[in-house]
Amino acid sequence: MDDIKTISILGCGWYGLPLAKLLVSSGYIVKGSVTSTEKLEVLTQYGIQPYLVNFTQEEESYNAVFFDCDVLWIAIPPKTRSGEGDSYVNKIDRIADAAGKFGIKKVIYISSTGVYGDHNREVDENTSPEPISQSGKILWQAEEVLRKATAFKSTIIRFGGLIGPGRDPGRFFAGKKNLPNGKAPVNLIHLDDCLGISNAILRKNFFGYTLNACSPQHPEKALFYIRAAESSKLEKPEFIDQLSEWKIVNSIYIENALGYRFTVPLI
Image 1 (spheres, rainbow, N blue to C red):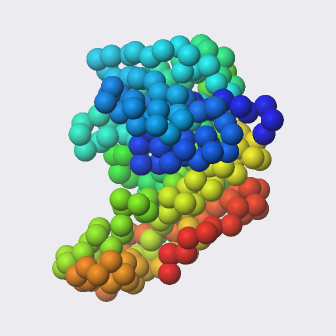
Image 2: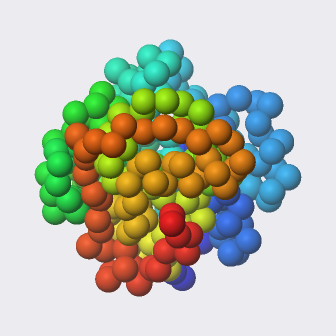
């Protein structure tokens, strides 16, 4: 879009860094954030303007220039396993306050299809999530912070399980035995499609929406992960032939509104 020239990405990790590189190659001015000084040089070498940004309980530090942008992209997951979960919603609240303070009008937030509990049904963007897991509940609360903000329009992307470089699904369960729920459908998305959907949102100026983003293919867990292990020449996992808790995540927006077609098949 002609009115989008500068994009700030809060969190240049597994997804945020490739996104930043893609946007630089597409002609955008891209500002990227990391939380440690040693990572700043990585951003610089890819033509990304580097910034040290911290919104922890102990510290809130940033350069105001980082928030001088047309779109703020928030790509920082809750680190529930390392104990950050309880403070995460407050962190998103403070980031939203900063976005409003500096006059940002468009925000994109990376969430997860984990906000949907496994309630044995198909879901889409019109389905009430009813999260079960701690991370799902935290993400749902964080989404609500951004949806209720009046200073800017936000689009929330709920990615499925992430696979791609450094996240080889063949390694997830390789060699493990008696794995439960082998007949449950998977809800996954490859990094290439994460980036393609992100780019489509910018091109279509698709703000003010919440959308699910995972492959339209939902093979059974056992089939998918056994094939993935074979493809990576790893020991095949063994699953119990059962179907307990499950969900299938669909999208009413990806193909119809964005016109996006997935490029990486799961099977």
